[in-house]
Image (cartoon, rainbow, N blue to C red; front, side):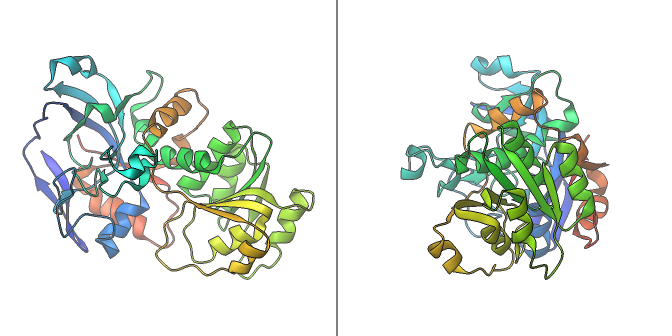
Length: 353
């Protein structure tokens, strides 16, 4: 079978591999679609960043060379344990994070920061291949009304769900989302589904148009060196500022924007991954008693909730699919396109069949 394998910086290869064989409590999954995200592109160009490259992962026993792809949907075609035969034939979203379950952080419910964590496509073989194996405990069956092409988008939805849950935001609160790429637009939808009024900020008109379609109360186009952003937020919030601000862009300036537009005593949730060290004024945090929360990946129950929201049409992932390509041309039509500085791409789906 074909598989896209990460060997090192700027070295990814389409290879022939044997179909994997599931272990006792694993399933063999025929991949429907795996979606590409910025993390994959950053690993290709600047990595290894998150990819296990020096020593094998404690849980998976794997290190590079690894099959890439961490946003995965598929169908269970075989299991080894007869007790799991009810999974055969089911379409599933893959909860791509394995945790030890016994460390201090796992026992306290902070699974997303388990030191032994293994992630499909980063520290275990992922979904950019025709078949993969994964523990049945980490497979979430999807409702019949969810299209095959939507299943892999459950994974970035879990990132949004996790960030919103970390914030403890309540219905009726006012939130701002800084950065309306895939994660930002999913976060916006999770917030709206939670009864929150949302202001969307981005530098691109097309992102703001989608934010409006998804239900943003207000949209603000961010212009370089614009000092009026805080004033605009104050106008939309009766002079108070946003109760919560979700920063999802991971750009150098966006954390500073997020901190500035949060109200006194407000909360900023950082979901972006930063390739440059951001700059901001700590006195804005200390002097105005603002709270900063970091949020990464997802926790154990976030995938089930994400799948339910997509199945109940609370989350619309279809506009976030920019194109669909075959695994055989994933490098030139996927990775290379997403690297382009003028790209207008959310997710590219890869069909490995």
